[in-house]
Image (cartoon, rainbow, N blue to C red; front, side, top):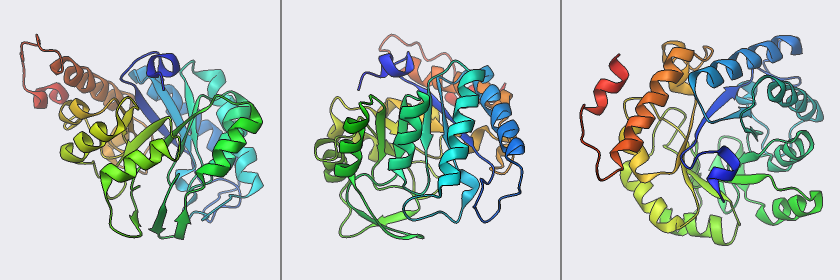
Length: 285
């Protein structure tokens, strides 16, 4: 996967728009216009703060469907993603939770989005929705049938889940890429807001070879200068919300602070970087 071709940068920051509850979800409030308005505000905040791409996901639809979501969710997300693509010029991705990669790919291919996120592409994970099995064979064949070039970013040992059998990060990364044919892999901590360890990122990066590795959860302006030393990009949302509260909308000032900290971390990767300030000072302005 050529990150520069998809994101116009080799170290992308992907900001996530958490959609308010959609039709048929347990907490649906009855107004799709309200969902669209909130999504538009968040996409604008992310873009103005300096992220490189936006990913749209039905985060507040919990409890999630184990497999396919309702057709109304697909319709609503298609409408919303189309609207956001009219507002911002950044690359846009889709994540249909919990693991409806088929619908995510259909949405992305039809509206012209560039990538999707898949929580379980290969293997079997025990989750709060039950056992979720990866179906890489179906997804890759579907992409071929659609004639689509949408990129597939796949979680490895995804958060809020446990693998059946002994978890081996190196093997999981290799199988996700070599047998699942993922275009990029995502490494998260154990839950939303929990970051992966630097050691696990280093293992994942070594196993992934030339395939990009993304930080998938828990990134903040405090830890991103260190974590990005062992990753190619980052997917971030929680720390960008007002007061760091996941229920709140995106705060453009927090986005800007995160982008600045990311740039500092990337600069540290240069052998000629003079280390003028501590990483902790970046987010304290």
